[in-house]
Image (tube, rainbow over all chains, first blue to last red; front, side):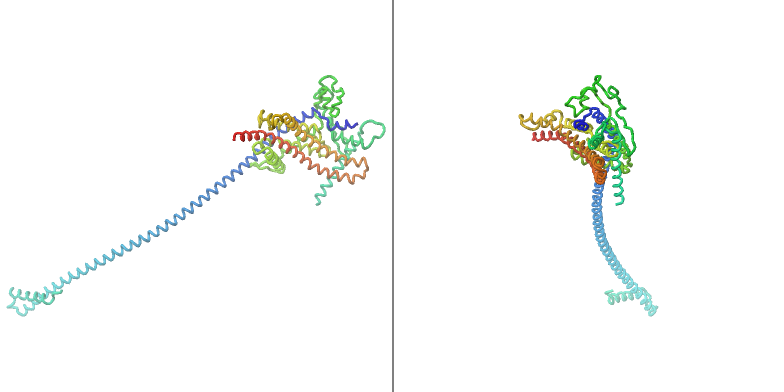
Length: 175
Length: 351
């Protein structure tokens, strides 16, 4: 073999080989795109989309949870404040009620005292008058016993009563 | 440690066997029918060239076992005029090739009207690589209900495809257009890688070590690149870009530069892949040839060195597939950018 023939074994361009290389490449390309790259890339894209979605939703849920937490904290603070106010109000109410009750009780007690005093006064007056009447009756009976015959007429009796009345007026004017 | 040692032993034995069987069978056949003993160095060189060049027949070799050559191309037509071995005019294949086409005999014959369209050894290797690739991708197609890959093959495929998408397509073409070109780029990567690796299995041939194959692949990238540019910039923008953004007088010169640039890019792709794949195998063969040409004792040096080169080739096989894909993505990215660049300028003009 001379040098040219040696070189030609490397540089030889075969039209048939070019065509067959193209055909083979196109067959490989179409088959792999349909059977391998298409499904593979699609599943990878789906997975990537899923991951992005998962991250997004996790972020969203977290933001929501944080918002809820803030809301809850506010609600708790508000409830606490309301409760404190309620307690304060109740205490004030109770104070007022107590005062009212006390006032009422005092007044009732006062009324009772007044009533009692008046009834005592009445009873006393009645008792005094009873005693006066009884005294007059007794005096009359005594006088009767003393002056049975002579002093049983109405004139004497009247005298005796007058005497008792005068007595009462003189001795017990303050009663 | 033990494991690593075993791997090296197996590798050394494999490389030695590969070399031995190749040369043994080569010497059996004997090239040429000359009476006297031939120059050993020249004979070895011829033998190596025969093994790294494309051919119509395929010779599968095992140590000390002689298989007859498989006349693959003959399946598609045995002699001129049969099947895919088209003869445009009677006797066209017997015509001498013009001197200009001496380095390209097949092209010369084609121009003479001798259309040898039969698949060759390189195509046979490509088809084997294709079947292996389909098998691998089929095995790696298992996913669970969430679409998560199941098994080693599935994880390897997915990580490689995602690498092509995120590190090659998106980085060079852009996040918007990049994913559209991912199937094409992934096919380039896996197809070239399969062919490269098949060639590293002892007994098989490297399809990408044939310049016609890399030229065909480069043309595919070229077409995809130009279509991307046309789609992105529109026919007017595409042509306008060829004349550049320069004063009117400079435009013809610019056109020449840009037009040549269109073809230098795929040309570089073609040569890089071809030269890398061919050179590695030739270095392997020549290192082992020392045993037969210089002295049997050379094995002490040449076999470990050949094993080291083989390991390097294992890396180069994926590296070259990656580089081809990366550069394709880069060129497509430049073409896609034509349209965006144009739009950008138009926008600036408005302000």
